[in-house]
Image 1 (cartoon, rainbow, N blue to C red):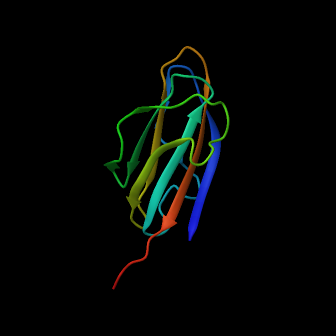
Image 2 (cartoon, helix red, strand yellow):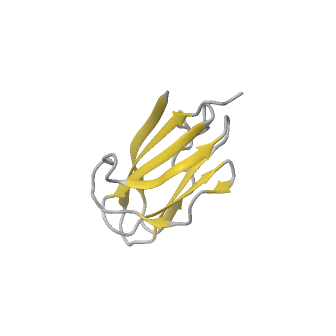
Length: 116
């Protein structure tokens, strides 16, 4: 089974949103899954970082500027990471620029089979 979520989130000038997925349906992994994050921004300058269950999946990475919701597979940012049931999925986005920017993101979670 594959589930996911997507949204456009405004990041104010000179700020960091430490948890884009707060209060979202898949803020916590619903099952053992392989995750993929697609993202882009309304202009250059945004960086994104992914942490899962308190583990750093990636360092802060520059986000492309396509100014639209992500297209699969073109806007792949982080792929092939694992989340265990109940683990928090945290996306941190920073905007060091002098203007408000929009962070467009899409997350896909694919359930993994457990071999007995």
